[in-house]
Length: 324
Image (cartoon, rainbow, N blue to C red; front, side, top):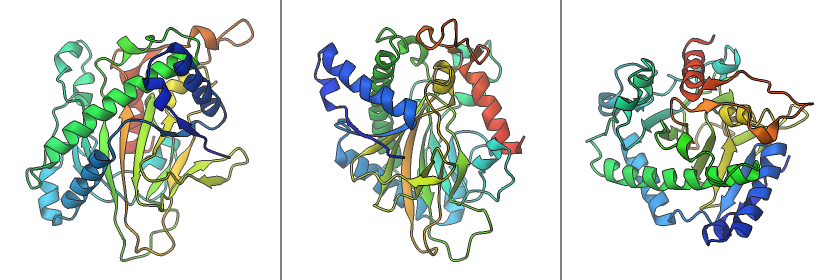
């Protein structure tokens, strides 16, 4: 299974023809693999390197200092989460050991919580950010990085709309009050052998509409599920982003696009550190996930009931936390 590399640079330069050309490549990738690598994304390499360096400075702090920035509840999508406190394989019903990574989450830079007061569960997804004052540069660096990826995610969603024969702005009012998260992930070198079936990140699909992932270093460890049930590595080059669609986009497209399973495997031995930063574009809490008109016809009726993005997200988060 080959993950295509798509240069989206021309899609920024104006002209519907160029955007449609990029959209056609994206559609082919999302239908066959669910993953693609992008170049020409206009995210400055210097900003990406600052983000990785800043995250490393935080993770190199003593454990007691890092623990100061934990959220009130272990499932809250903000702040610091210790090694071994998440288990993504549980979302598939597996009883694997916990993931061998630690994370620091931030969310939207705008406060949209008051707009979702009629949905009691929305408050959990719009909680304020936690900033680690032990690394003073964390907030300005990651605020800039979040804003930059937020803009890139919006651009990709407009290309997605074109790829699905919808108006180019179809998703605009579905992501203008999003609850997207941006975790910096640290997979530290281990001084011990992992447990059987314990991975750096267990097998799972992503929950939202799309993910934009940057990996620090050459040895990615990221693998995607192949059609024959095996696994294939994804090894982006420096400065490239890995993009994949999530479960909400698969539902929007009536399974035309694939929210593919993936995982992060342990390296040979336990001495290699890995870091990544992911931007997970989650739509507005009240965005309705409904089969797109271009993805249904008389022979292909909608496969999923209509639901809200926030409802789907809470179901997934409960499964990750409780293994149900």
